Image (cartoon, rainbow, N blue to C red; front, side):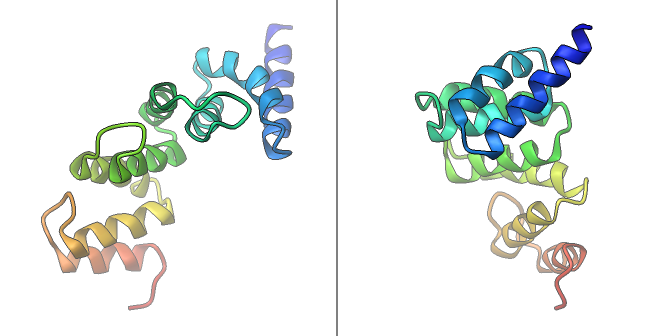
Length: 144
C-alpha cells in the first residue's frame, strides 16, 4: 500500500510540475525528494533554484541537485555541472563543472557532450584539447 501511495504522490507531483503548478508540485515531490527519489530531487532543485512555488533557496537547490547527481541521474549531473560552470547556487568551479558534465556525457546526454566539447575547445576547466572537443561534438551528433 505504501508504495502505491508513493507512486500516486510522484505521479501527482510530476503532473503538477509539468502543468507549472509549482506549489502543489513541491507539496507532493519534496517528501519524495527527501526520501531519495532522484527525479523528485531534480525537480525540487529546479523549483528552489528559480523560486517556483517556493521562496528561492540556493543552498537547498544545490543540495537537492547534488543528491540526484550523486545517484547517477544524468540530467541532474548536467544541472549540477551548470551550477558549477555559471557559479549559480555554488561557487564557480570550471573543473568541477567538467567533472559532472563528463559523468552525464558518459551516459550519452547530448547537452553535456556539447558543453564538455566547448570546454575542451576553450580550455575552460580542462586542458585545451581540440581533438577531444571534435570527438565529443561527433558523439553528440554534430557533423564537423
